[in-house]
Amino acid sequence: MKAGHIELPVSDPVRSMKFYTEVLGFKLDVNQDNRFIWLTSNGYTLLLRPGKPATGDFSASPNLCLYVADVAGAVHRLAAHGVQLIEHSSCIHFRDPDGHWFQVANPGDDHSSDAASGA
Image (cartoon, rainbow, N blue to C red; front, side, top):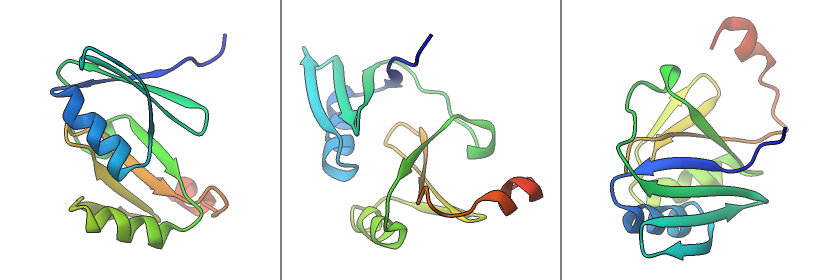
């Protein structure tokens, strides 16, 4: 088996498409009648589809981690778009318009102390 794509249920696929393309930099692949919207980022495929997303605290919900070389720059850009940021341990978390949790991290940073401490 190999991973295919990630599906995210969203209340408004067009609104979410704008967030993912304009704020997060995803590329639009296919827009099927403004209902099923396929996006890509660095070889990963995301499908935004109509549905009701799960909500909850980031420690109990799935998180998508977005890798960036410049965490401070990414945080500044997200904040400039009005995205509410939450710092937890060495990671920055935020939600999309439907409440899905994301992390911003530099993949080269050492997170081993976070795992050891249970963070």
